[in-house]
Image (cartoon, rainbow over the protein chains, first blue to last red):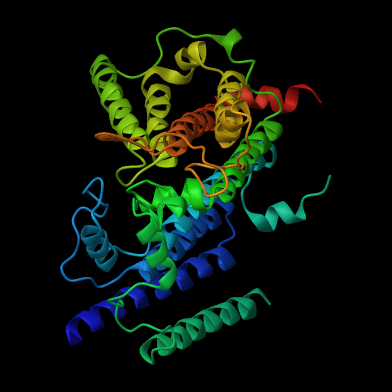
Amino acid sequence: MELESFLFNIVVLSMIMNIALALYGIFTRPSLVKKIISLTIFSDTINTLVIIIGFRHAVPNPIPPVAIEIPPTPQYLKQFVMQAVDPLPQALVLTAIVIGLAVMLFLMFTTLQIYRIYGTTDVRKISRLRG
Amino acid sequence: MARIIHIFIVVSLVLLVAILSMALSMGGFGFAMPPSDVRTLARIFLNTTFNLDDKYRYISAMSPEAVTAIVWDYRGLDTLFETSVMFIAIVGALAISRGAGEKLLKTSVSKQGMSLITKTITRITIVMILAVAASIALHGHLTPGGGFQGGATIAVVPMLLIVVFSLYLFSKMMTVYKAVTLRSIGLIGIALSTFIVLIIALLYGSSAYVFQNQPKIYSQYGLPSYIEPIVLGGTLLLFNTFEAFAVAFGFVALFILFTFPEDVMKNIIIGDE
């Protein structure tokens, strides 16, 4: 039990470290491409963290994670509710992934066009451009 | 000045990590271990996702997979607007590209693409990828997966075709405008699926809710969810199919825009000014 708690805390701690590193990349790297890479790491870490919030320590773990007895008897359904993880964070993460993907593709295409027109992705140079 | 800002950012991020880890170790997040129980809301979702009991029959989504039931039934309107966000991102990319979709066909070059071995293997794997994608998308109401995941898997195929057979060959069967039109057809399918139960009810001279899937107490209409021994999932199957279609062609449009040849793009950007 102690060991499991320790390992779980290490997982969450590594995600906090990951968030800090991604934020460092977003704040300090001048290249737009590296900013976008950091942004993907950031959003993926947040999504994983949200899935961990929905996780439960069920013993024994249900395999597979869906209801397989069709139609389900009340006893089976009760056992299923006792074992299954929280589905709501997974549904929200699915939404977040798709929206994040759409925004990411738009950002990538914008960066590509900026590079084609101005010949640089350095924000310090782009901010000095006129006209 | 830039050095001071850099040091400030580093110090504040280290402080962020220290404070969050301290909160974690003292139980500030509410968990030091994954809990052995779920929240009440999750229990309601899990209990009503496939329940034939009389008490729950009229609030059940009748799909064994709770995540798909939440995405397309309990929170259907949310997902509808999420789909439109992706559509708007594609429209934005099209607007920035200054009509780059049309002009590639004129500059057709033969003998493009990778070697014969790669092309043969790609021809075989494309069929497998499509089979897996169809399985993910059409079984979305039974197993983990659904329209988005299936559509993203289908989107691997155009990427492979562009890389292996070259964009010139690919643009003979698919252009940006064709892909966006097909994506719009998928979105129209999704929009029709939201009204299909209402249309059926109106034909019978009654009324139903928008985004209704299963029979509710005040409107007894709904698509069949369960025909012995197949689980159909009502409108969930329709939504997953159209969503996979829409997502796949949205990706096709973006991939074509991304892999546009640099010299052609330069001419388009500079040429008209």
